[in-house]
Amino acid sequence: MAAITAQDVAARVGRDLDTSETAQVEAWIADALAHAGQLAGRDLDDAVLPAVVRAVILRAVVRCVYNPAGLRAYTAGSVSYTAGDAASGGDGGPAFTTADAAVIGRAYGRSLGQLRTPPACPPGRTAGRLTDPSPCPVPFASGGAS
Image 1 (cartoon, rainbow, N blue to C red):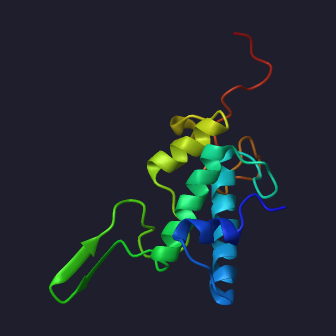
Image 2 (image 1 turned 120 degrees about the horizontal axis):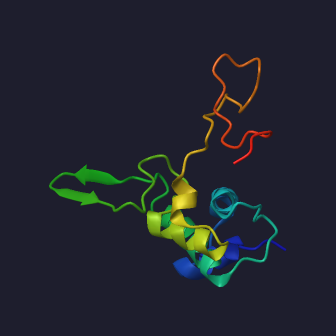
Image 3 (image 1 turned 180 degrees about the horizontal axis):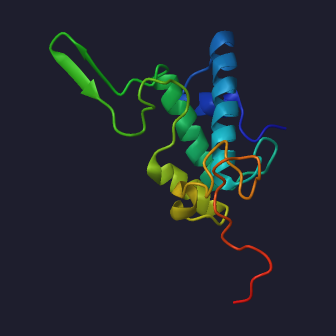
Protein backbone atom coordinates (compact mmCIF):
# COMPACT_ATOMS: atom_id res chain seq x y z
CA MET A 1 0.00 0.00 0.00
CA ALA A 2 1.29 3.45 -0.87
CA ALA A 3 2.28 5.73 1.98
CA ILE A 4 0.19 8.55 0.50
CA THR A 5 -2.66 8.27 -1.99
CA ALA A 6 -4.59 10.62 -4.25
CA GLN A 7 -7.56 10.10 -1.89
CA ASP A 8 -5.50 11.61 0.95
CA VAL A 9 -4.95 14.70 -1.20
CA ALA A 10 -8.63 14.85 -2.22
CA ALA A 11 -9.62 14.82 1.45
CA ARG A 12 -7.39 17.84 2.06
CA VAL A 13 -8.65 19.86 -0.91
CA GLY A 14 -12.25 19.05 0.01
CA ARG A 15 -13.42 17.59 -3.27
CA ASP A 16 -13.16 14.49 -5.42
CA LEU A 17 -10.47 14.44 -8.08
CA ASP A 18 -11.34 13.51 -11.65
CA THR A 19 -9.36 10.86 -13.53
CA SER A 20 -6.79 13.24 -15.04
CA GLU A 21 -6.31 15.06 -11.74
CA THR A 22 -5.83 11.75 -9.95
CA ALA A 23 -3.09 10.74 -12.38
CA GLN A 24 -1.38 14.11 -11.97
CA VAL A 25 -1.66 13.97 -8.16
CA GLU A 26 -0.19 10.45 -8.13
CA ALA A 27 2.77 11.73 -10.16
CA TRP A 28 3.25 14.65 -7.74
CA ILE A 29 3.11 12.23 -4.80
CA ALA A 30 5.85 10.11 -6.41
CA ASP A 31 7.94 13.25 -7.04
CA ALA A 32 7.45 14.51 -3.47
CA LEU A 33 8.35 11.10 -2.01
CA ALA A 34 11.51 10.99 -4.14
CA HIS A 35 12.53 14.49 -3.03
CA ALA A 36 11.72 13.73 0.61
CA GLY A 37 13.70 10.51 0.30
CA GLN A 38 16.77 12.51 -0.69
CA LEU A 39 16.29 14.72 2.36
CA ALA A 40 15.74 11.68 4.59
CA GLY A 41 18.70 9.79 3.15
CA ARG A 42 16.56 6.73 2.34
CA ASP A 43 13.90 5.44 -0.04
CA LEU A 44 10.41 6.44 1.15
CA ASP A 45 8.28 4.89 -1.62
CA ASP A 46 6.87 2.02 0.42
CA ALA A 47 7.94 3.22 3.85
CA VAL A 48 5.71 3.86 6.81
CA LEU A 49 6.10 7.61 7.14
CA PRO A 50 6.22 9.51 10.40
CA ALA A 51 3.03 11.59 10.71
CA VAL A 52 4.92 14.87 10.44
CA VAL A 53 6.66 13.78 7.20
CA ARG A 54 3.36 12.58 5.77
CA ALA A 55 1.80 15.97 6.58
CA VAL A 56 4.67 17.90 4.95
CA ILE A 57 4.49 15.81 1.77
CA LEU A 58 0.72 16.17 1.60
CA ARG A 59 0.99 19.96 2.00
CA ALA A 60 3.49 20.12 -0.88
CA VAL A 61 1.17 18.09 -3.13
CA VAL A 62 -1.90 20.12 -2.12
CA ARG A 63 0.01 23.29 -3.08
CA CYS A 64 0.44 21.70 -6.53
CA VAL A 65 -3.31 21.13 -6.82
CA TYR A 66 -3.96 24.82 -6.10
CA ASN A 67 -0.98 26.10 -8.10
CA PRO A 68 -0.09 23.43 -10.69
CA ALA A 69 2.36 25.58 -12.62
CA GLY A 70 4.22 26.50 -9.43
CA LEU A 71 3.90 30.21 -10.17
CA ARG A 72 5.62 32.42 -7.65
CA ALA A 73 4.18 35.70 -8.89
CA TYR A 74 1.71 36.86 -11.49
CA THR A 75 -0.18 39.98 -12.51
CA ALA A 76 -3.57 40.17 -14.17
CA GLY A 77 -4.57 43.74 -14.92
CA SER A 78 -4.32 45.71 -11.70
CA VAL A 79 -4.18 42.61 -9.50
CA SER A 80 -0.88 40.99 -8.63
CA TYR A 81 -0.03 38.05 -6.42
CA THR A 82 3.29 36.87 -5.02
CA ALA A 83 3.66 33.51 -3.29
CA GLY A 84 6.21 32.74 -0.64
CA ASP A 85 8.95 30.16 -0.90
CA ALA A 86 6.35 27.37 -0.92
CA ALA A 87 5.94 27.94 -4.66
CA SER A 88 8.40 26.11 -6.86
CA GLY A 89 9.28 29.16 -8.91
CA GLY A 90 7.48 28.13 -12.08
CA ASP A 91 9.00 24.68 -12.34
CA GLY A 92 5.76 22.99 -11.34
CA GLY A 93 5.64 19.95 -9.15
CA PRO A 94 6.02 19.72 -5.40
CA ALA A 95 8.48 22.00 -3.67
CA PHE A 96 9.54 21.95 -0.04
CA THR A 97 10.22 25.10 1.92
CA THR A 98 13.34 25.33 4.06
CA ALA A 99 11.15 24.58 7.09
CA ASP A 100 9.65 21.55 5.30
CA ALA A 101 13.13 20.22 4.48
CA ALA A 102 14.21 20.69 8.09
CA VAL A 103 11.15 18.80 9.39
CA ILE A 104 11.79 15.87 7.03
CA GLY A 105 15.49 15.82 7.86
CA ARG A 106 14.90 15.95 11.64
CA ALA A 107 12.36 13.12 11.41
CA TYR A 108 15.17 10.93 10.04
CA GLY A 109 17.95 12.20 12.30
CA ARG A 110 19.50 14.66 9.87
CA SER A 111 20.17 18.31 10.63
CA LEU A 112 19.56 21.16 8.21
CA GLY A 113 23.35 21.54 7.96
CA GLN A 114 23.64 17.96 6.75
CA LEU A 115 20.93 18.61 4.17
CA ARG A 116 22.70 21.68 2.78
CA THR A 117 26.37 20.69 3.02
CA PRO A 118 27.73 20.06 -0.47
CA PRO A 119 29.61 16.84 -1.10
CA ALA A 120 33.39 16.86 -0.70
CA CYS A 121 33.77 16.01 -4.36
CA PRO A 122 31.69 17.82 -6.97
CA PRO A 123 29.80 15.69 -9.49
CA GLY A 124 32.13 14.05 -11.97
CA ARG A 125 35.12 13.92 -9.59
CA THR A 126 36.01 11.01 -7.35
CA ALA A 127 38.34 11.07 -4.37
CA GLY A 128 41.68 9.42 -5.13
CA ARG A 129 40.79 8.46 -8.69
CA LEU A 130 44.07 8.22 -10.62
CA THR A 131 42.61 8.89 -14.06
CA ASP A 132 41.05 12.17 -12.94
CA PRO A 133 43.48 15.06 -13.60
CA SER A 134 42.22 16.90 -10.52
CA PRO A 135 41.00 14.42 -7.92
CA CYS A 136 39.33 15.63 -4.76
CA PRO A 137 41.43 15.54 -1.62
CA VAL A 138 40.96 12.45 0.50
CA PRO A 139 40.42 13.78 4.04
CA PHE A 140 41.54 10.64 5.88
CA ALA A 141 44.19 8.85 3.88
CA SER A 142 45.23 5.45 5.23
CA GLY A 143 48.73 4.76 6.43
CA GLY A 144 49.33 7.97 8.34
CA ALA A 145 49.55 8.14 12.12
CA SER A 146 48.01 11.00 14.04
